[in-house]
Image (cartoon, rainbow, N blue to C red; front, top):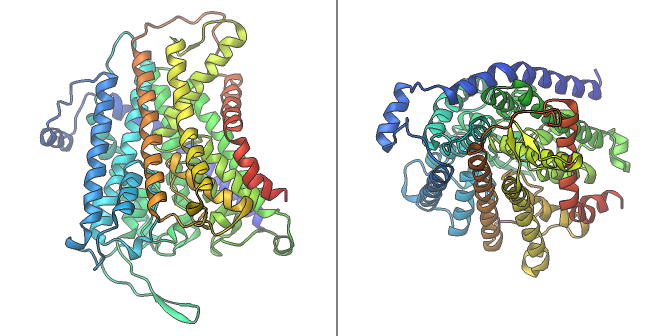
Amino acid sequence: MNTTTAGIIFVATLAIALGLTYRPFGDYMARVYTTGHHLRAEKVIYRVVGVDPDAEQRWSTYLRSVLAFSFVSVLFLYAFLRLQGHLLLSLGFAGMEQGQAFNTATSFVTNTNWQSYSGESTLGYLVQMSGLAVQNFTSAAVGIAVAIALVRGFARSRTDQLGNFWVDLIRTVVRILLPICVIGAVVLIAGGVVQNFHHVQTVTTIAGGNQSVTGGPVASQEIIKEFGTNGGGFYNANSAHPFENPTNWTNWLQIYLLLSIGFSLPRTFGKMVGDTRQGLAIVSVMVVLALASMFLVNGLQMAHHGTVPTAVGASVEGTETRFGIPDSATFASATTLTSTGAVNSFHDSYTSLGGAVLLLNMMLGEIAPGGTGSGLYGILILAVLAVFIGGLMIGRTPEYLGKKISGREVKFASLYILTTPTFVLVVTALAMALPGERATMLNSGSHGLSEVLYAATSAGNNNGSAFAGISVNTTWWNTALGISMLAARFLPMVFALGLAGSLARQKPVPASAGTLPTHRPLFVGLVTGVAIIVVALTYFPAIALGPLAEGLH
């Protein structure tokens, strides 16, 4: 079997598995968020934190709960990182420097998991398990909770109630993330992923010397980061490390896990609004964008021009030999289409145009399928904008799911769409303008700009992957990226919840002959086109100066 055929089979089996998951998993999540029954374990947690699970919240109260929980999480994790040297299971590592601790705390609380350090040589077991891994759960759950609140905004009428953030958060962790992560961890352990508290010594010859690698509780963190579409990793090599991703089938499983929630949530959306065709339309947009990305990255890596790539048949630099080009390219596409950030190959070594596609995946707002929850509310806001544009084209007041899209709703959608690009482009411009920050670039010219743009895009879109080739563990980078991660995570949530509150207060508008059908292929194409046009208008100058200029050189 040749490499191309193997790659097609890899993607096809992945698509089939996700398709089989879509309906049962999406329906299950819909039941999780609509049932009035509370599990015994959940009742205990409600009593401990002092929450009335039967009380609902207005959008402003829901938002305050999101921000308060996240603020406390940042403070707790920051303190945990700073005080590591005084804690158990520190493995002798000192506390993290304050700038890096701020960056790391904001990174994991925002579901970014950007790492400006090597996990195995910086953090002990306690911080990895009780600090970072906990945020892998809760930050993902926060994103899903906000998405569910927005769905309720579409589904409800004449009310200012959007549910209860604490109930949504706890149910997400207890009923969705925890059970499947436990099962997934066992499967990964069976596949060879390490899970222990011992110092596992492997000796590797590097530059004529020996290197010791410490093993640890890798399997549990690996499954949490993939299923919760988090990035980060116990080892700096991340999912290219054999302790984290030993075989081709564990590689396939990790891709499946990081995509499964995102691709199933549109079904949850359709069930909750009472029309599963709407969910099918949304997931269709996701599928079109995802398949286009995967085939583009695979094609550009397999058929890149140049003497060496042509001689070997593909651009193999930076890939793990046990995975090969197709499995590595598919993983790279999947991880940048979501907010995962995990990598099993070196993105900085991708072809210039292949790297450009990875950048575009994040610049889309990671909506295909995007992060846990954030992908759904991101694409729903694009759908609102698409409906508004469609209404202008036919001269009618735009409507979506029986709700009028007026100036208030369009303002929320516009602010949402403009927030992340603002921080991405400002951080990129400042980094290129400041001589000290330019000095951290290991490459000059177009590729150097691509590395800076990738770092800013990854942080601003809460992705966490990196081109590398740039030294970001400086006071400026830690601070700038930390602020960008916080602002680009929580400001869009403000606008998404504001939109949800505005929609929930409306009375339903009956469909008429002039209503734009939002469950047909025409609407799928309209939303897809809007997503691509928004990215092109916003980022094209930066892309043209970076990877496109390098690729056309």
